[in-house]
Amino acid sequence: MIDRYLLDTNVVVDLLRNKDAVKSKLIKVGIDRIAIADLTVYELYCGAYISAQKESNLALINELIQKIAIIPSSVAYDEAAFQKNTLKKRGELIEDIDIMIGSTAIHEGRILITSNVAHMHRLNGIMLEDWS
Image (tube, rainbow, N blue to C red; front, top):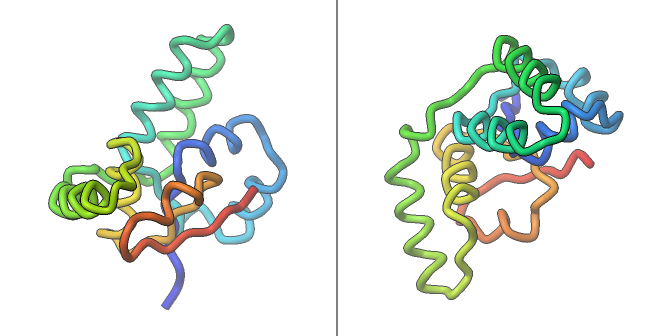
């Protein structure tokens, strides 16, 4: 089976900033095996609107979302609710948006690419890689 990946927001930011490690790994695996969650798009837009380079960042985001698959987070609502309940019981809560993105990866059977392994590893059944 060929691995498929979901990029966390921090990795997409690195990609948009032309970080060599992320770019080279993306080229190696191929964009057809890569996706992002719709919540990542939301987070990217939020960041662009508060940045000093708003227009150029918005242009980069708009270009990216034309080239990459976007998975609606709604496919993972049940998984996310399960994960949040589990984390709460263990006293290990993370941000809701991270739960949603991680749950989207779990639901879709994708490896989550993130530099936030310390938080994301708390999710049950998640597969993680750090490309930084």
